Image (cartoon, rainbow, N blue to C red):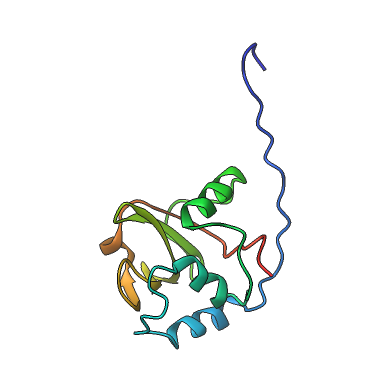
Length: 136
């Protein structure tokens, strides 16, 4: 390390299985298509979909993406089925769940829970495994 450089150590974050597996979480979301009850709560919706009843420990999607980035848990490219997709839209960071083939599900932008083509929502996105390290 050269003089003046700062070393940043990224601690390993233990991966714990979610209370709901991927397919059960996707089914939970698809059962709520059309619901406006989750408007402006995309992070809470995803946390609940994967089976966590209590707070995620993150204030919002921007807070979550900052934590995930710090722990080197964000990926680029096509999101696999069940991955959380973090995207920029309407001056905010939002989160939805990948259905695969470029589609996502969740409370999108300003409306109800729906399925959409990610490319129509944003071209600025990353994805992560459905990881809620503070959820319980």
